[in-house]
Image (tube, rainbow, N blue to C red):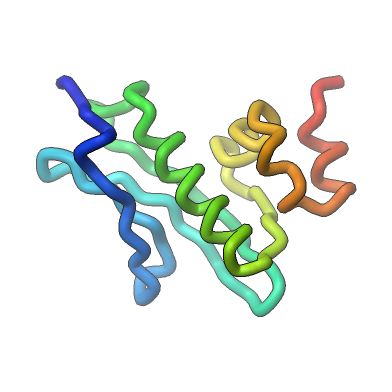
Length: 106
């Protein structure tokens, strides 16, 4: 399935505590728990037909930009978000110094 990520946008479903992206009737999600000073990213889910097309990365960037805009410290419990943060140093300022050390390659 061809996926044009430029033609879709991520929405913030505050009631469900998740970021969502819909492509051809398939919904990808990134769930979170928000606190006054931090946001915990729990789980990223992309339907199999659109896996590997950059959908999870688009969700991650949107969610991390949201955290930055709202001055929230990020706690990446989701393995995908944790891996993404390890590869994208431009977002590591959102982590505690302890979490940054956990993400750095050994």
